[in-house]
Structure formats: structure tokens, C-alpha cells
Amino acid sequence: MALIIQKYGGTSVGTPERIKNVARRVASWQARGHRVVVVVSAMSGETNRLIALAKEVQAQPDPRELDVIAATGEQVTIGLLSMALMDIGVKARSYTGGQVKVLTDSAFTKARIVSIDEGNIRRDLETGHVVVVAGFQGVDEAGRITTLGRGGSDTSAVAIAAALKADECQIYTDVDGVYTTDPRIVPEARRLETVTFEEMLEMASLGSKVLQIRSVEFAGKYKVKLRVLSSLEELGQEGPGTLITFEEDIKMMEQPIISGIAFNRDEAKLTVLGVPDRPGIAYQILGPVAEANIDVDMIIQNVGHDGSTDFSFTVPRGEYAKATALLDQVKGHIGARQIAGDNRIAKVSVVGVGMRSHVGIASKMFRTLAEEGINIQMISTSEIKISVVIDEKYLELAVRVLHKAFELDQVPA
Ligand code: ASP
Ligand code: MG
Image (cartoon, rainbow, N blue to C red; front, top):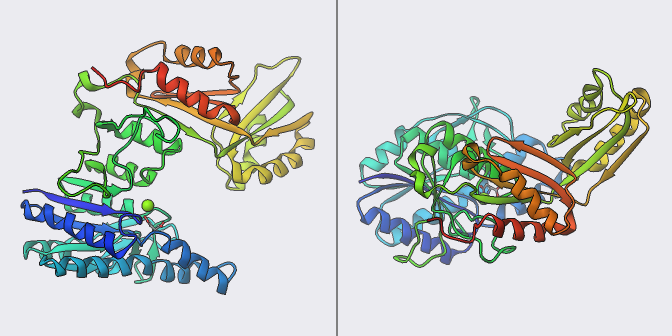
């Protein structure tokens, strides 16, 4: 008998019929002797609707009141799911974040969880209840309702799993696992049986949207075993999904060198041309960007020539105009020749913990792109990933040829 946390996202609870399906799935786990805590999102589209509603009344919604409104989406789902469970003879009880209680800091709309009181949940589990908890929300010290940021129900589920020391945290979604890459681009993409936390973190931050990044960080930190599964598969015919776990738990034989190809269209590149090659320049360029709260991702500086150099970096595409305006301001005072930019770029990355112990991954990646005539504009690496920036129009081609070159379409021996 195991203690299992199951999280169902917006699509999985998007209609009354789907909520009834979730109830049947939960019941089947309980019938097999497991204790189950269910964490749910709002019905799909509901959080967007609530936020839009708030903005119709106040253009810049007051953060405290916005959370009061946004948190209601999940409150509806916990009630509905509990009723659906009772309707098929399962004892169920719902809890809002505040009722649990999930204590957070007071950063409305992006609160962080401070602690979780497991008392209520444990008591109900003891008496054979399925406990249904609203994701995405908590309360601060003063009892004010807070939310955890968009996609925050994943984090709620992982935090509850950590607090209860659950055997597994299952994230049910509309895909049946984590794939080697987006199957919409590469039909041969395969579901991964297992992936390590580190790889999952890289993939999430590189644009794979299966899990909220914070929930993966949290799970890694608190050693919560995470499994991504589909809620849309027929009961009794469910696949095993993808288990996200620790490197030492994955048998070496099964571990391919590269686990996936991630990509991201959401960046733009800025280049400061002809800056004096002297100490402090990087700081003078990036300082104002950081102060404006713009996230900088890749950075490169060329070797200097005749006392000057070029400096490039990438920012989220939505911040491109703002960053360009900032650079135009600093240009004169640092003595740069010109600011250039490009927001039609894409980042493609190969990810795999096997890179640590194998050489030649980068050269294989670069050769593969060269053979297709794809120019690499920027490169960055970490221990387990290599990313390149290329022209956006070659993105799909790049992902396809890399997927093939690294044999990700083939089941590892
Ligand atoms: N309902 C919230 C959102 O749409 C939280 C979640 O779904 O995880 O962002
Ligand atoms: Mg979600």
C-alpha cells in the first residue's frame, strides 16, 4: 500500500464528464489499496477567464484581490471532484489551500510555500477518505489568500508529496509522458521511460512545457519521485508515463547519452558593436538590463581587436523592445559604435547527463547543423546541455536532423 499524490491539470478536469473520469481513475487507485491525495487545477481556461474578468474592472488589478479571484477556479474543481467521488461511493473531502493549511509568503500572484500542515490530510486518509486539495493557492501568515504563479498546481502537488513523504507524485496531463522532443515537429519522437531531474530541469527551462520548472526544482530538492502520465487514456489501459528520478536510480544500460532535444522560439538577440575592450564593460551593458528585471540568457563577447570588441546576449522576446531602448541609452556613455538586434532567432539544445562521460557531442551537433547549411549564431554549454542560437526559420529542420543524428527515434539497447 502506497501513499500517492495525483495532480490533474486544467484539461484533465475541463468538463464535468472529464471530472467524472478523474473520479473513476482515483477510485481505481484507492481500490488497489493505495491512499490517495488529489491536487487539482482550475478547469481549463478558467484562470485566464478570472484574470481577464478582474482586468475588466481594474486595469492593473490589486494583487491581493486578484489572488482572491484567481483562487476560486481551483475551489470549484475540488468541490466538483469530491462530489463525483461520493457519487461513485468513494469517501472524499475537499480542502482549499487555506484549509489545509498551505502557508506561503505574502508575494501575491507569485507566492512561495513556507510550510504545509499535514494534520488534516493525514486524519482524513486514516479514515479512508480521498483528500482533494486545491492547487495553486495558499494563505500567508495573516490568513490572506495567495496564489503561486501560473502553472502553480504542479508545485502544490510536489510540496504536498514532500510534506507527506509520499511514495510517488503523479502528474496527470494531456500527454502520456515526457518526449525526446515535441512530437508535433518530429513524429518519431519517443516517450522516455525515465529522465533525470537535471535533464528535466534543463528541458523545462529550455522550453518543454510539460511541468512547471519550480515543481521540478522542488521535487529534486525534496527527493520526491515524479511521474508524468496521461489522464486521457482509457482506465485499465494506462501507459507507465515517464518517471523523473535520480541519476543513480537509472540503470546505466538504459541511460542514453542524449535524452532529448529542446527548443525555444521565445528569445531575441541583441548585439553591442564596437565597445571598448576594457574592464567593467559587461557590467555597464548588463547592469541596466538586470535593473529593469529583464532575464538575460546567453552571453558572448568576442576576442578584442584594436581595443574594441562586440558583445551579444539574448533576452525573452517580449522584452526585446525594452532592452533595445535601454541599450540605446547606454550606447553613448560606454562609447559603443552600434546596437544591432534580431528577434527572429530560435534556440535549440541537446540535453543529456551522458555528456559528462562522453566526448564529441558538440562536434556531432555542429556537424549535423553544418550539413544542412544552418548557421550557428551563438553557442552556450553546461555540463549536460549544448545550446545554439540559429535563424528561426531553420528551427524545425534543426530539431529534426538532430533528433535523427543522435538516434533518439531508436529505443536504446
Ligand atoms: N490554474 C492555474 C493556472 O492556470 C494553476 C495551474 O493550472 O497549475 O495557472
Ligand atoms: Mg498546468
